[in-house]
Length: 130
Image 1 (tube, rainbow, N blue to C red):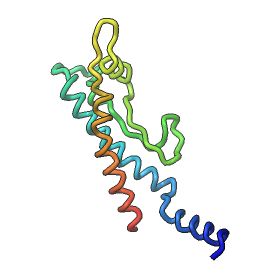
Image 2: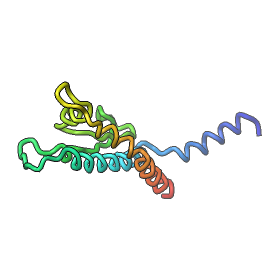
Image 3: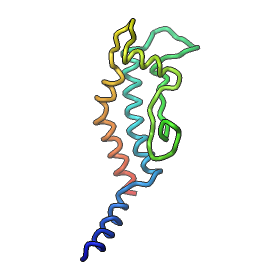
Image 4: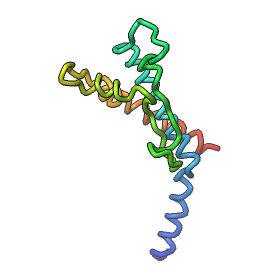
C-alpha cells in the first residue's frame, strides 16, 4: 500500500473514534457534573452558613453546569460555574486584604481531575458502544 492510500485509510479510521459535537457535549458534561458535585460538597463543608438567607442563598447552591463554553457557543465543551456568587467564591478562594484565601476551589478542581476524566472516559465508551 502506498503512503497516500495508507494515510487516507488512517484518517477514515481515526474519524470513527472522534465523537461528533453532540457526543462531545455529553462527554464533557459528564465530567462537568462530577466537578460541580465536588464543588457543591466542598462549599457546603467549608463555607455553608447555618442561617437561611432567602435573598442571597448559599454559595453551594449557586453552582451550575451548562452545555457549551463560557460564551454559550455550542462546540462540544461544557462549563461549570456560579451564577450570582462567583465573586464570593473568588474572595473565599483567593482572599482579600482582610481575609486570607483558603484555595478551596483550586484544591477541589485539582483533586477531582481524575474522577472527571474517569466519568468522561466512561461516557465516551458508552457512546462508542452504541
